[in-house]
Length: 228
Image (cartoon, rainbow, N blue to C red; front, side, top):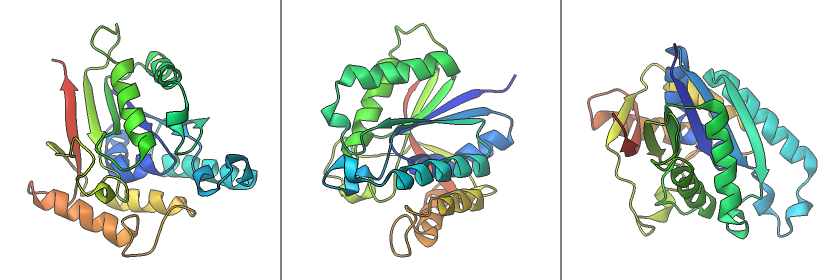
């Protein structure tokens, strides 16, 4: 029986930036990886959310589906919360959304955002995941890990606490190129070097994380909780 893994991301592309190569590795090894993208993305680039062209949102969703397919994820779902405006919603609504995902997918392991991050939505997703999977919950979640998001975690410049301090490293030497390919699927989100979301910067980060533990390339995570 394959492991059931849930990746909870705030926006389209966060799942690739945070753990795309790990998703590809887990999927290749037979795990059932479900990706949940809670926010719509892109609308925060407009002063009025409703001014965002609907075709851009449609394309972003298609890009997310393409990226998930490239990574080998078993499923991807989109939940269209207001981009960079999660703090305008009752926290309970976000928690209930995550609870529904956990109940339906029954994951043994969850990957999600670290709270020491510049993006307000990322911090809210982190808290929602911890609330939805509190130890009194009668579920199967045994392990929760948080990821870094280039151009968000790093841009906090260690001023948003707690600081991201990775203590779990996944060897992604064989799947880092798949991550880069999946990121390219997000045509509106990928950026040229030296932006942190560029191919060159993402590869450099993977090389740096890998070199710290003896791998050619790695993705780094901070373990929140593990139940044995």
